[in-house]
Amino acid sequence: MSKQPLSVVVTRRLPEVVEKRLTELFNVTLRDDDTPMTRSELGEAMKTADILVPTVTDEIDAALIGQAGDRLKLIANYGAGVDHIDVMTARQRGILVSNTPGVLTEDTADMTMALILAVTRRMSEGMAQMQSGDWQGWAPTALLGGRVSGRRLGILGMGRIGQAVARRAAAFGMQVHYHNRRRLRPEIEESLGATYWESLDQMVARMDVMSINCPHTPSTFHLMNARRLKLMKPDAVIVNTSRGEVIDENALTRMLRAGELQGAGLDVYEHGTAINPRLRELTNVVLLPHMGSATLEGRVEMGEKVIINIKTFEDGHRPPDQVVPSML
Image (cartoon, rainbow, N blue to C red; front, side, top):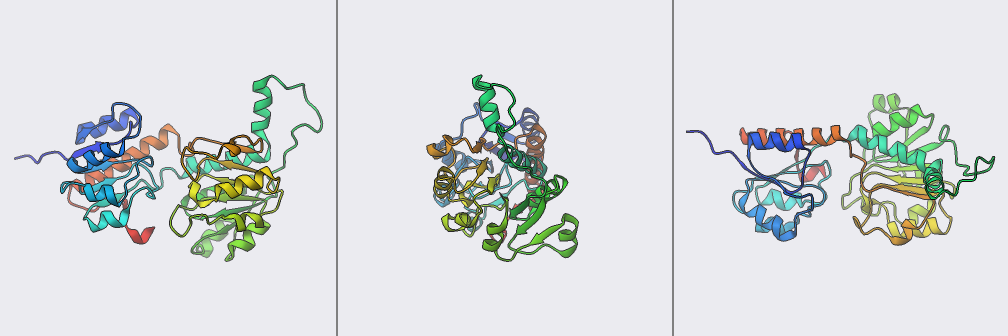
């Protein structure tokens, strides 16, 4: 007698090729539109499904996990970050959590470099001139930005993405520096041409560009707080393609408005879509709608990782990308 296919609930629309493959392999409930599930819809899904496939827009806290039915055994997250899932509570309930690491590395690193260039070369100001029709022609002193070659880049978080940023920055002639929970092995450090700083404060005070590439955990919340932001040079810029909660957004906004920082490039925000309105008004800030990993190739590869995690679990093994609390 053949085994019943697993019941899988997907909380958001995914690329068509991913949805098609999921449908072929499992008993899947797909989302009809691309709006996030409400909390009550998430709760209902977790009561009936064997496997939930959420995204970063789904806040799966202890209370929701507490409502989960006995069937729910795997939360196969569509994304690398799992700060929206209470992994510890899930583990206590016997629910495994997996993610999709690695596939977003190159895309996010590309966007990090794009933001560094956009801010230092004042691209958004130039685009605004062209779109408004205000451009009066070339002038020797118009929209003067800064050359990235020779600048010191400080990378906060030297994981896969941080290292990919380091490789790109080196190709642009930047001097690469980094701070990380653990120092890289000497051969990796040497291959990247990166200088390690044990003291984050000392690194921040000396960098021309700061790139935030660490995950959001309790220990990284407001790691770039008001005191640390004040250490940055007034002609320095900061970019964030990681998690908004790592930077104190209000403190950053105040400093940018006061001219105490040259600029910022942000793809993520402390309060999700509720961006500080004063931040939107600034001309020295480039704001993107969390699109660092938004490539078709990346999204399809994320889906493939989700499918492998589910299929491996179905076959009686631990998902290859299982997340455990000690990793956080």
